[in-house]
Length: 254
Image (cartoon, rainbow, N blue to C red; front, side, top):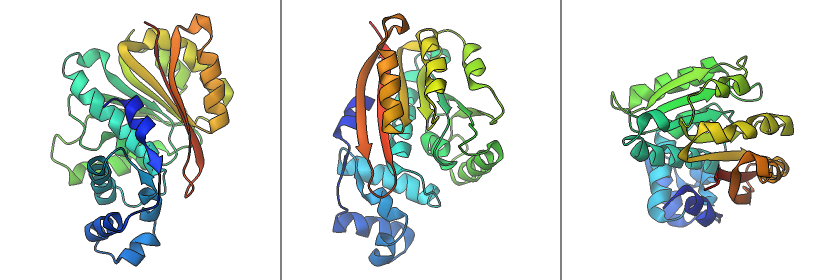
């Protein structure tokens, strides 16, 4: 399964009794406590299969149970890194994971959970996301709970870094996945999208996660002929327990 199939088959549904029981057992809580807590938000997003659901539920509840972030966002980012980890064994220098922005400081940490140590990951903070010190603390705590090689190698840039300039110094065709998360301005996407034709590896993709109206604007711009990009899919999604979000997946034109 690839990222497009993963997103396409994700849906919102009510939690089942089995799922409530599964999460309550992990946390040593009653099912009523589970239903009344943050975990309820997570349960409203069904992933493509019960295996995926239990896998991510186990990871995020065990390691990052203090987050009020959007569960599906964290799953998608983690799914990207898992795909990239396997692909990166073949061509590591051209398969970097680069994330700019987040909804919550745990989003980047969730992306990296149990990713292969051969994967290279970069994260650039934005003014409306988590601070560098927050994210570093979360990652240090996460690393302490995982095996010594349980996290990919990562670099974090602070919110004062100009991420447009940061992208321009990347080696050509070096990024396997570029995740643009919650940037909140049309201008930000206008500055970044034209550079993608030089940044993305031949198999690389750009994932945009933001308010639906911004996702559609970015999608419209990406269809411009001079950007050499194709919109693989735009996914308008609403998580009723959190906030309305949209996903857009871009790749280089063949």
